[in-house]
Amino acid sequence: MRRISGRSGSSGISRRSLVAASAAGAAGALLPGVARPAAAAPRGGAVSAASASYRAEYHFTVPDQWKNDPQRPIWIDGEYHYYYLYNPDYTTGGTTAGTAWRLATSTDLVSFTDRGIAVPKDTTPNGDVWSGSAVVDTENTAGFGAGAVVVLVTMSPDDNAYTQAQYLYYSTDGGRTFTPHGTDPVLPNPGVRDFRDPKVIRDEERGRWVMALAENNKVGFYHSPDLRSWTYAGGFIKDGIGVLECPDLFRITGEDGVRRWVLGVSANGKASGLPNTYAYWTGAFDGTTFTPDAPDPQWLDHGWDWYAAVTFDKRDRHGTLDPRTRYAIGWLNNWDYANTTPTLDHDGFNGTDSVVREITLKRAPDGTRYLASRPVRALDAHVSRTVRLGDLRVDGHRVLGYTGTAYELTTEITWDRLTGAGLQLRRSTDGGRHVDAGIYGDYAFVNRGPTGNPDSSGRWQESRSPFDPAARTVRLRILVDRTSVEMFVDDGRYTHSTEVFPDPADTGIALFTLDGGAVFKNTVIREFAL
Image 1 (cartoon, rainbow, N blue to C red):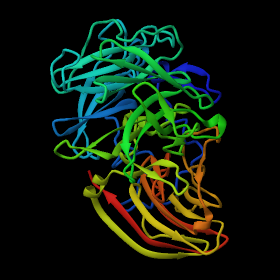
Image 2 (tube, rainbow, N blue to C red):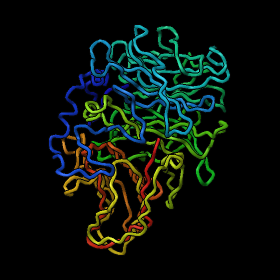
Image 3 (cartoon, rainbow, N blue to C red):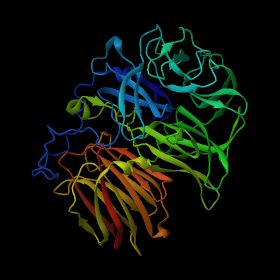
Image 4 (cartoon, rainbow, N blue to C red):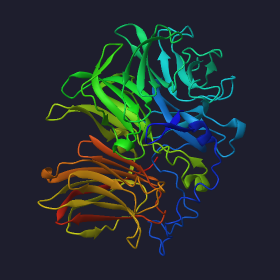
């Protein structure tokens, strides 16, 4: 839980007040410009916007009310424990505003089981609990017992940027329920604005804990022997991308066998023409100082809606760590329009996450190391239907026979000469509404402007990432669900996650090219069942 970063990087209204605000009417204000279709087209019968569900079919959604920031999942006894910020009083607000930590568990990171609230709010005078991180204290360094789960979390008793401090909760029942460790912070605010979102890792080489903390334009680093007492060690400063939030710090082994550290933050780079998602640097970390390979960050997502993302350990069913791969999950929303969604009126909730991704470290021909993303492999075990369309030749426009609201589409587009190519997704029967995804000139893009979406300003409609047109080929893997589109380009160095709200009756797909023809090779559509 943090404050909104404006496009200039300044702080605005509090996020506590946002999640406390009345959600009534948010959906009604969303889609005034989207005409209802004259004819319904989805496979399986007509669906009206008034009665259809907007709940995602294969993405994680909160059971009811509100969710925002994911908290880094941890592995316990064969299951991933996924905590997230949850406000059970979203629609009523008032004095009960603010978030708790709710828990869901999963063995494959596709299908989740709700376990209810784990870290409650308002059980101490400090109020609700914001973002932080959980760790398994296997060596009993904190004194709560070997294997206790310890949560370091931001709380702000006065909902004031200068009173944000870090508090401790602990669990002795495998992370299901938590008890506050007193009412005093384990890391008080030293008098600075914005002091939040602790991310704690174990520094095995030096036998201590390390915390990365968001401090406005800085990520501060702290050391602790026991998770209870913390000492400031240094910091990493970056200006120009707004207030830094939700820091992330991990080590990963690249495909070439070289190990690098990665420092990540959620940041708002829109004022500089950059994404508003997860910025990261590869580099070196000596336990105190992070030294980046380059001064400017790369971005793990170029869409509008992949915020407060976390990465976490990949483990096999025996718990063995994979040093070459991490998982990642992000909140499919944006603080510019967090309350703008039809899901509340239709389905009683506001909160959807991206699919879990697998993250690997690769090296480009110019020597740049970067993180590549792909959807979690466990999705393959949930495929319920496969439609193989083969190679499709397109010169202009081609409507497919397939219709659907939730699926994965993969294709490789090849050409000799053209300006652009791609797909119209969630297309209306008259072709007037759709989400466009593909390449144009020297960039890849997703454009949600021609369909229902949460950005009433019209400024954040098309996301872009670099593309080399000399390649004359591009591989696209696109995940479509009822309120989202996620596109992975080529090897996944560039991804676009975008929240969209098409009319439920808009279920078509069309292929298109501009100024030339192309072949959409090995085009495959897969549906999933959870």
